[in-house]
Every structure is written in structure tokens, then in C-alpha cells.
Image (cartoon, rainbow, N blue to C red; front, top):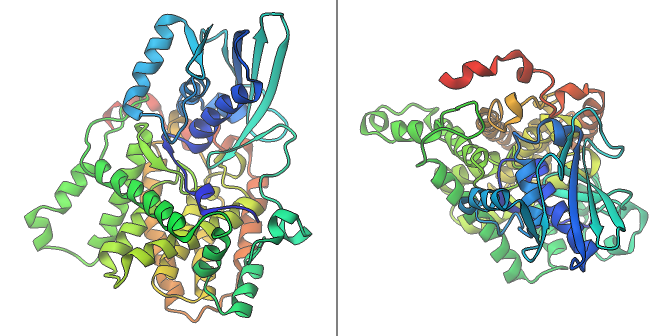
Length: 465
């Protein structure tokens, strides 16, 4: 498959990769596709399915407006967003791609179709522009998880290496399944991170690859640090308290450190993950890993590796971790999904757990079969997990799920490393099971806030949370 580690790990903002990052990218792409814009008199955006049902809680409306203004997820400044949006609201107009002004009013130019979905994915959106001569252009895009988008009818972004596609044929170690990747490893004697590195070298130099991975880790690391020192309440109306900073302070107190228990290291791992997802919920700078809703698991396990595992060469280990995690994410995206709106939270937290478990095994020198075993365990024990955010916000249960997912990833890695790599269920089989489980899952449990915790918890009582 023709995917990169930087497709899975993208720098952006919260609270959602599919509902915030994807729509921002799609809005901007629509205008770029329709350029020039000098004679445009009106632009409208319509949101469907899951994007409409949880759009306000996921800041989809804000993301679309920012995208039309020309902002990108990796470059938008989180602390400036509210000011930019307020300025546009007051003016009653948007400057398309930062230059050409057109009238814009919510309700007229930004419409939520909550009872209607489009054909190709639950996260659908339609953009329409009108020119001075009365002609219109309309395009439909889908946000398919992890910040990836596709236009209606667009060919898949990942050509299959199994069909001899030209783009894939040049890749040294093409794979669409874990079985294929393991076979390459047996034939070449290389580890999974070594094979992923060889594939990446087709697109960029060794120095560029290392610098890119290091940058992703630095953003993740900084996100944890900021989350561990930032208190207050999260936006959105539930008045959820940020807990990571206070719990972290408690864990670092002299009394706490003098009475440490064996499980305290894992307690800290859960706080790392929660810190990231509190940052995400607040609209801060995060990395899709592979989604925003599951963005805390991989950074948390990476910090655990760097600080608690005492590696002799942490820089190389972190790079191997990221490359291996990306391989697992690629397989899950290609053969199932990483979209909560498509297959539930098993495709977000479950996949992130598998990626982190596999990455940790690779960083600790595990074999290819042990890497596969860890990833399989990570997904297997998230099968059937629903995506049921209260109020459409990426807060409850999402933040705690990341903490639990990080701990489960370490447990999965430990189990795999203590074995010899043989296991009963293959990663390919569990990914296919995840896909089928998602297909069988009722829509109300897939990021619509129409079922599960989203309707069985009285949200008005969360002022005390």
C-alpha cells in the first residue's frame, strides 16, 4: 500500500480528526479546486450524518469556516481560533482563502442535515459556490477518519499492492496484509521497522524521515507536558474538569513518591494519555494517532518507553516505535477503518492500542511475530467498543478510554514479549473481525450520540463533574 508514516501521524488541532481536521481540509480543498475565486458571490456548506449529529460538539462548524478562510490543521494557531471566528461572525462575511470576501451567515450558509446521510460514508459534506454570472459548482467530500478525506467517487487513496499497481510496485516491501509483511521479513531477514524505513526512503531522504518522525514525537511530548500543567474546565457545556494536571501534581508530591506502589508507573501512563486528550478536547495542538479521539495512547506509551524502560538508544527506539505503529495503522485503515462513525471506537482506541503495543515491542527489540501478537491482542480486547460521546463532545468517555487504552497497550506488549511469537488468532483475522463487527453495529452506537452513554446519562447533571 502506498501510505506513509506521516499519513497516520498528522499534526493538527482538536477535538476530532474526522469531524474537525477532515472538514477543515475538505473546505479548503474545495475552494482550491474551484479557483479562481474573484467572481464568487456566495459559498455554502452542508453537513450530513455523523458530521451533523455531533458537529457542534466536535467543532465541525468552526473547522469548516476556518477551512474556507484558508487555514490548515497543521498551521492554524489554536489560541487565535475563537478571535478569528468572532471577527467573521461580527463582519457577516468570510475572506475565502484569506482574500476574497463573501457574505456568510450560519443557518443560511452552514446547514446541518441531522436526519440525512450521504451514500459513501457517515461523515459527508457538500460545498456549493455561486459565481457572479449565476453559475454554481457543488462538490461532495467525505471525512473517512484520521483526518483523511476523499471526494465523492474518488478512487481509494491507497492503491493495492496485490494487484500490481504501478505506484505500489516500486515499494521495496509492498504489503496489504500482515501475512505479506511477515513474509517479506522472513525472506529479507529485516524487522518491521527496517522494512517500513526502506519503503519511506522512496519518498524522502534518511535525514528527512528522521527529522519528520522526531518532530511528531516532539509535538506529542509537548502536548503531554502542557496537559499535565493545565487545569480548569473543558469547553462545550458539560463543564468537565481537567483532571490530569491535579492528579499529576499529587503523584509527584513527596508523600506520594515516598510511598510508591508497583502500579504507579502505569497510573502515570494513564495520566499522560488523559493529558493529551484533555488538550484535544480543549482544541489544542495534537497529533492524529491514528485519530484525535485516540490521540493520547501512543504518546503515553512512547513516554513510558523513553522514561521507564531505560532504553540504551531512545532516539532509535522511538523512531522504530513510530514506524512499526504506522504499519499497524495502515493495515487497519486499509482492511477495516479508523473512523468511529464507520465502525465505532474499536477503530479508534482499539487501533491506537494495537499500534502502541506493536511499537513498544519493536522498540524493545521484539521479533516480527511478537510485534504481530501484541497488535492482535490490542485490537482483540477492544472489539465491539462503541463510539457514544456524551453531548457529541470528545470528553466522556473518550478521555478516560485513552488512559485505559495506554495501559492495555503496555499489557499487550508485555504478554507478547514474554511469549515466543506464536499465537492462535492472526492480526489479519482480528482486523477483519473488527470490520465485520463495525458493519453489524447499529448506527446509533457509531459517533451519532444517539445511543449508549450519550443518551443514558443526563447531561444537565455534569456541571458537577
